[in-house]
Length: 457
Image (cartoon, rainbow, N blue to C red; front, side):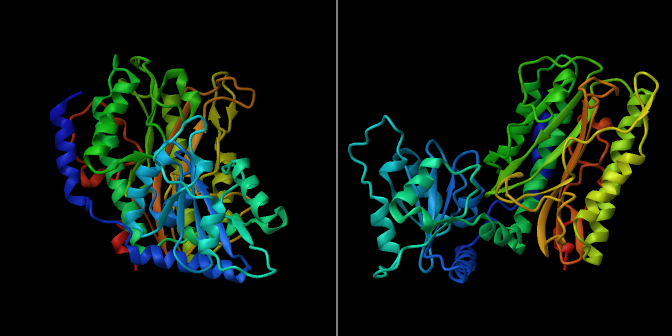
């Protein structure tokens, strides 16, 4: 690792990063009002969302809890008034500091403490005490509770807790209520995500600069992680990805102590989280040596898919088309793409997942907003998305048939009305930057779809 190059990358990126850019208390109150309005329309007295270090998005969006730690936690949103974040004793210390940004209240629940610990001086409340303080008593009327978090995330004992207190018939899963609201982004959210992707580009350039034969995957990841934190990104959406050689089949494999060998392909990926919002940058490169004819055909075809999907996004935005138009265009491109396999046959490569997913207070776990063959509604009015196009080098039986195990191009993009643009400046093909001391991208090399969000009207 060349420390001078890393420092130059950081200094080049710093002017484009405002570390004070964050969601205001006013905006958090506006979010609560939107959720509470939807609750009243559905007859709910109380709503509940839960979170952990894995699934942070819901409570992060509602209360600014960007740094959960240790125990699971949750948030209670009354039909009127200020939400209350509920937590265990240890994680509660951190969460108490987190909620200052939003103005939400916080209390400790005995039910959320680590199971075999004893906190002699902690002051716990019961769920009934908290709820009865938040929800006015209605004689003869039960309290109706909406569960806002996915059943994939919420622990069964949280659901049982509410059903036991308020009756199972009064506890309703309504995950779409919150998902629909937070899918649409404010101008501040879209600006923060832009900053996050400025950090992602710089950190990725740092990883490319140190990539060479003989270096360990974790050492490459360390360069990216160091730059992300130096530029203000406290967390990541996933552990930094460096998967070399046959590890490419892991698709999202985090860096290991494996030594990278000359001539191997390496998939690199990182997702910085800046003031709660996530960015992305993923590409696949070869370590030293030019691409063979078949390797180039594989990588060029992937770039072609990126162009196809981006053009479809722009068309869907401008004409307000159903979003599955984007998926259909991408799938049609793949079906028409025929590459020579290692037996001389001409086959279409396989994609591992859909081309577009939603983002925000998580890298991809927003719960809605992905573009699939079944999404008939148009894209949202003001949204942040990620374009994630990739090819697997193996066939449906798992046999390697193409010269690259896995190749990916993933960027973040914004949509405001009919306007769209990619946040990231990194070009689609970054092969020439492997092992170089470059500290900033030349203007003529940037992503052809890059457009600063501020240009959006």
